[in-house]
Length: 267
Image (tube, rainbow, N blue to C red; front, side, top):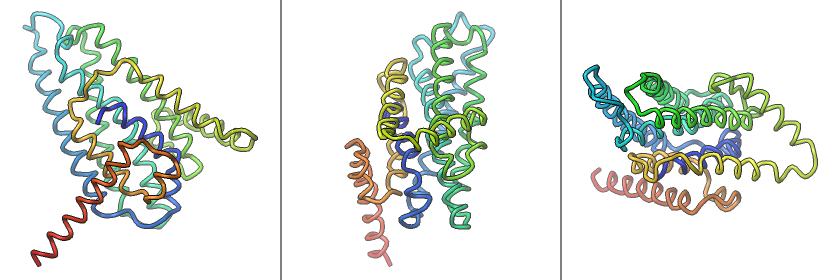
């Protein structure tokens, strides 16, 4: 799954997070475990890639790196854009636990976010390291960073009605301004078009500037599957999610059923 698709999933989760928060039922433990496992594996891959780059970017290097280093640039793109979904999902799960007076899902989401934030800090070190990265790559990735941060706050603003999202925003005041805008728009007629237009704007913002292939597409898909499997099946028909996400949910549900059957046969 391409990093761009995770951005679209983040938007869908922000728009319909109340389905989980106020809720149709408990989030399956298997989904939580799958999210943790896939996220940690992806974080480990990022760490290895950034460590490899750091070992190459020594004072004795012959020139700037990154222009032909597709795995490195792809990993940085995933770190920057992937944090949108990580923060939105953390906001939803924390609101989910608060709504129920539990502490079941939020600790995992917070832990993943903390590790993702650490990976982001390493990426920022790469971006400001001068000659270590080709100038054109550094400039493009910095634009991607700023766009990802802004859209994170936009999506959190959409979620603000379900709970406090300040701690997950890059700029809490900006997120609250977006929340106020969404609230005001929601009281006016004809606002059924507001969110579709917002989605179109987000797709346009990330249509260019990303590599054709994401280096960790397999783990991106597992992370997406773990999230979509927490929503009720009818949600997919109601909101018209992309077919790829629907197939991911079927895959996740089938895997869970196969695991249960195997467990029963071994008992």
